Image (cartoon, rainbow, N blue to C red; front, side, top):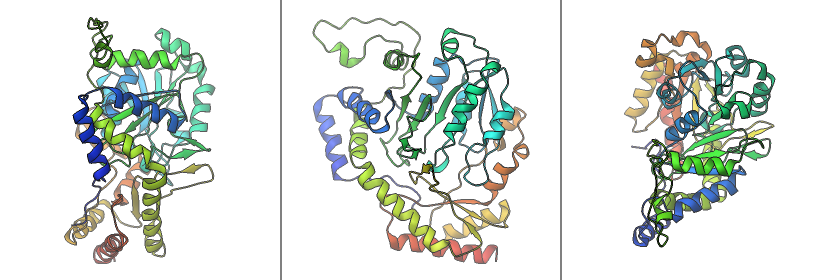
Length: 402
């Protein structure tokens, strides 16, 4: 069976994890702090906080901004449930909007239609590793300042809707010559096991707030907020006579460990000159093998302003419905190839249907979902395996769709 997306774990990673275990620091410590510094250098943002997941990062930043009951957060209907769940956790209302037919990313015109006096945050999602249209989104929140109603000092200081990017897929992608993480107010990365850069589990908040904010000060506040509200972490308490600490708020527990950061440091060191090169090669091989078949719509990996980090290969099949798509997937699996679907739209999920959302309200999202199959794309996927995947896809489409 060709798997869908196993992590690339080699001796270098294993050696670094063992070295971390032997160092005596397995939870948040020097490697986590170094990983944060390296991410900031790589992305070109102002400060970075590493956490145990991207989901935690999104929720912490919503709470930091004071999002709560009566507030609205705009997000694409075509995303994973985590993007919406964190809004629910904060007591706010998810306002879903449709996406672009071409690239799966959130539609600028649909965002603009959805902005109201209750809108506090826009959460674009960089689908598959291709950045959203951040110049337009950043201009949009400035142009709609008059609609923004601040309800706390942080919101007053910003004076407009916050852009909180769900960049779970897009670490290392570029827009207008800049890396994700430095494209808008705040970006949140995922380092989950299936991501391009993994720490097994983990994520990072890339702070890039405008000049009226002290991003380092906010980073320090978030360190407290994400570790029980404790004003000293374990590393700080190891200094002689510095054992005493205080709890200054009822915080959360979502810090990254040094074991995770150890993996991340190795991954980051070789990310541009190895990982992304390999992923791009695989995507280009898929394109060359599938491109001549007019039944397929290939994913977009670059434009004049954007370069993907090749996280997903979301293939679309023309002139099929959801039932045929599912039968094609079953047939592909029968040929020992694992594929996936990104994503079942959030408004189609039972919890959100029960809140009154209707996936039929997002026709582009629905059309994309019904025809999409994500093909395997991972570091150790060989050319021969890619050819096997393509053969399985073509033969399955031939059998089911003709």
